[in-house]
Image (cartoon, rainbow, N blue to C red; front, side, top):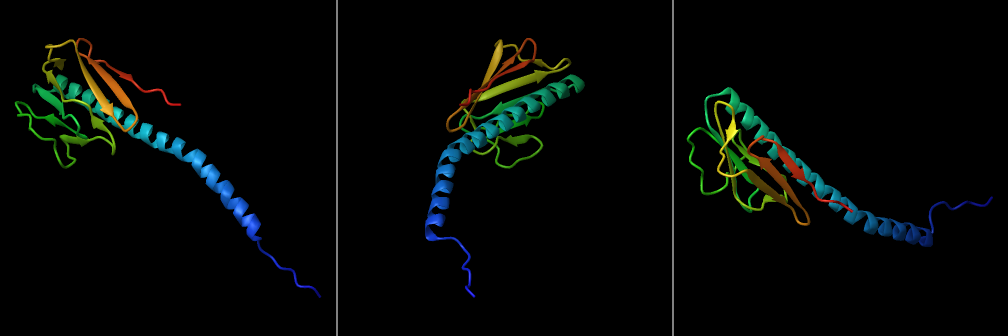
Length: 158
């Protein structure tokens, strides 16, 4: 009786690993773009949510609140009434300190002040521009002071 040998030949293994390598080379950049845009979207939603919560707080409490973000940093703070804006970004995540996702930073400093009784935004300018940067993309958020609405311009992905 003849004994059957089972298993793969070296040629079969080389072909399979070559095909897996080609698939990884094709899918890798797409997956990297997906991760980067997901981090930007999370960070954008975090900033929008914080703006909305701070606006609501200023409407329901007789206290002024300010949101401040630092250029080149991942962090932004919701400052208490009459709080002094720190010169440096906050280090640890807390109720008043928030961090954007990894790889996402603010392009420039920004400060938004909400004043009671209606949560009005400081009317020095008509709008506040907030830019979030990652390695390959920039998300622009425009906060209109007259209405309190936030418009987000999300980059096109290929």
